[in-house]
Length: 70
Image (cartoon, rainbow, N blue to C red):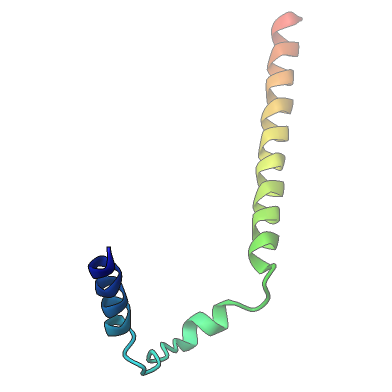
């Protein structure tokens, strides 16, 4: 048990090199994120567009049913 614990500690210490990770700066990625909720706004607009399509299809279907019953 002590051997496993000391091996685990040794592996943990070996993994920590002490130098900070290199920053990965991508100017295009920073420009694409304007505000945190911009993705939610896009999703909301997409949902509104889908609802418009569904409403139009329902109206077309109602017209077809009305024409068939006459």
